[in-house]
Image (cartoon, rainbow, N blue to C red; front, side, top):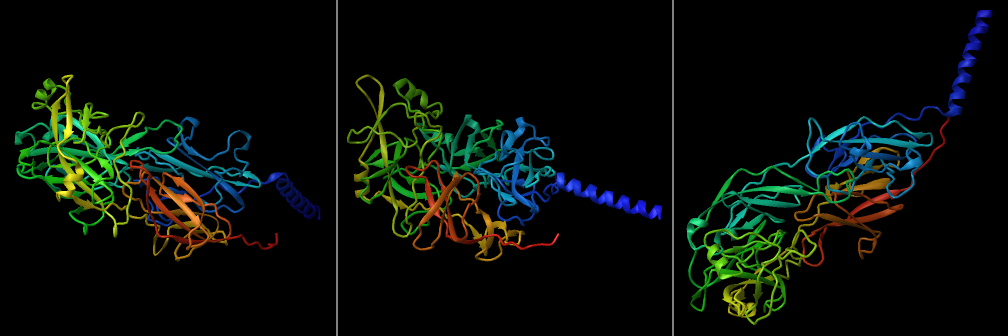
Length: 546
């Protein structure tokens, strides 16, 4: 009996101890598990290397009110290594779910452009914890990953006076290098002209064979506090060689437009980016010229100018971000130009005029506080509208002060009226937000993390939506509406990533995405995606016995 009473007493003390522990605050849920990065859906094939900023997902934690996520360049997550974090500062850390950066579902989008950055084995690390009524859980195990290009640029078929290569996913621009003349420059498109080789050079030895290399540039967009480089680079391509035929004498004629596609007429395919423009011949009224300037217009009469090219030699012009050639400003500089290449500069550096004496400034000219020029054109309806373009010869004259000035040999309007005019369409492709089902992640009403599999997914609380990147886009705009038609935007956000979390109320919603082209003239807006649907429901509750 004493032994029995002892066992009962021990059992009772153990029960009371357990009750006391619970009353004083039992240990909260365990740290989240399953943290991983993804681009379109949480269930994508697992990866540790991404060309563009991934979103993140993890297994739901029972009782979680919200989550805190942080990224760092160290597995120790010291403050000096933090790249991104939504952790509350001060006494609110690990306690509060308030504020616009609170993560309500076990998935998150960062909204910034991470640089290409690799390590052994990883350069970047993510970690997550849940915030419950009992406080914060422990941090999850670090998830390591790398940011890296997927491939190197490869040459594409091109036209005389141009080089052309395959676009690289995740690139925001390209650097082109001509090693034989020790020259490099930047462009946002996948084509470049050979102006340095042709301008003021009559000897075909300058441009008959041009060797070149190119690499992708990824510029960091969005706020990164720990000082990661603002620009990162992919590897240089192998050394390529492009051969150019002899120049064709005779009347000047417009030819092809070249970018991701090649077009020659109204029926040609639309370009996603401002194309390179090509021509043949060099003569006007029997007079040969060696310098040329292209113009683009919104009307077939070539009156309303939307783009002015810079002065170049050769049979082609392709827009650049890093400025035009610095033209010779004196006779002595002009003589030297026959034996050397001209450098790029923020402006052409001399006075230039249209044929009627109107001063002009090239669209490649850099603004006073701008690191790149506005050298792309807004989208148009490719089925009904085109840009019209022409090329005019450029002459050189000596001013009364003894400096050189450059003037168009004819007015663009006259060139178009004479039949020297071509067209091209400019229309970016819409962001792809679905493949069978929208790229939507979120919690189901039963608390399970969902990767959508139906055309109209249903989620509880905040959905995370993703899309495929658009060529030329440096950021994206997302809009949502209660109605599909007429579309009435109830909210909008901008992000530098290819995913976003949408804070929506209960009900059926439609959302759409479009790219924003930062080097586009005027508005940066590109083409809207087709609207996708998502249904948001309120949580359901049931009474459970303890």
